Amino acid sequence: MGSGSRSPPGRSSGLVGLGGCSGDDDGGGTAATADFCTNVETFEALQAEGDALFESTEEVPVEQLRDVFTRFRDAVEALMDTAPEAVAADAELVGTTTAALIDAYERADFDFVVLATDPQYAEVLAGLDDDQITEANDRLAVYFREECGST
Image (cartoon, rainbow, N blue to C red; front, side, top):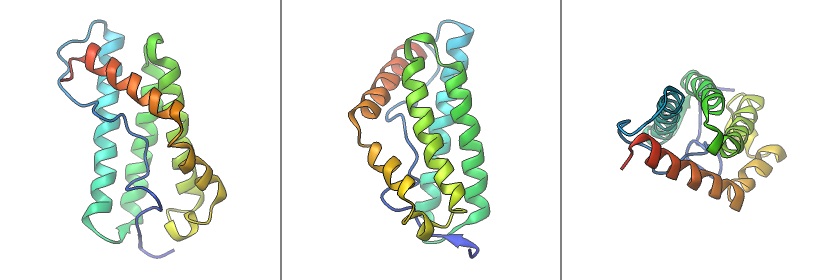
């Protein structure tokens, strides 16, 4: 592959987001909740960084993609590891779906022409519109807003 890659088919960065989950961490209770709140903020910041890469240029340098996606994978794992019991299943669903997208990007070596023909990517991408993922994202957003003080 060359030195850059076009936007992934069907999405900006293609990463699963916790829409509306950013805000101040002024309402958290326990240290575990505070860790989770911090990890959600990191997750959201990295999604925004990935989206900004695709919005800023037609061809995104592969090195930048690898860096963002590596950090995003770490953030996903941290999010799943620190999710409170009340949202652990939702964090797991969002996390495993996001990890499947990252796996597809890595299999294609961040070549979005190759990615466009990957049937596993197409399956994961189609699954993003699944009601379970939407509902999990919504519950995570509500939890974050209520427990982390997001407005």
